[in-house]
Length: 283
Image (cartoon, rainbow, N blue to C red; front, side, top):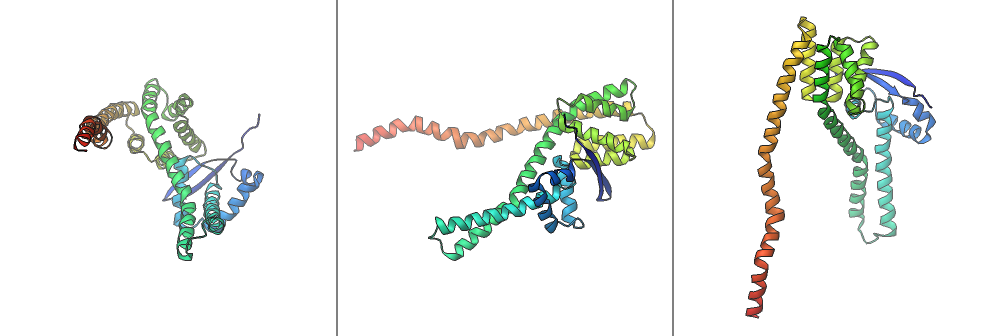
């Protein structure tokens, strides 16, 4: 069974050190010629000193990509798609759509290049949204397990490690983030920095409130158990109010569906036969 080689990569983004295990980072580029070519192409476009690179690094962490060469491969894919779609349109213009005038052909070629360039950004944003939704769904179970572990006498770090193990099957994304938190602690980072990195990677307001509570409890020396119990109760109240808000919005959303989908069919069923009868009479 092939064992994965794990390498630690870290960098500073926005004053907070962000790091993570880069699983088969540059080794994949060396083993796969296509990834190596895309990585070299992306290095010509994306500079590591630019602000865009730092923003993209945060987005890739939120999407679950911790490989060191992921951004360069991503930019290589963007450039390759822009080139391929524009060239494909030119070939179609020459072979099939030979009735277009040159100005319209040039405009459509630029549009196809822009679509190819920004298409990977769309898929990246979709992956970030899906991953955030899965982590948010696993947060209540993780909070309950964390309260039980802390009340049983475990330390906070060992309790988080235990929660990560328990969530491995039900919510792998959140389990990976908690394991990464424990890896950062083992690498020598402080608990405060590790918790800040956790909120930066997940980008969830509920988890940000929880980490702020843990940081303040650790800073002022208050009891973590009582703080987690109070936050768990307030978190359940917030979830209940959020569910009531979603339920209150349902009638307004149903009105749109009724107007666009159900009312036209009712009009056809109710008014259709009389209209046909009147047309036959006046005919």
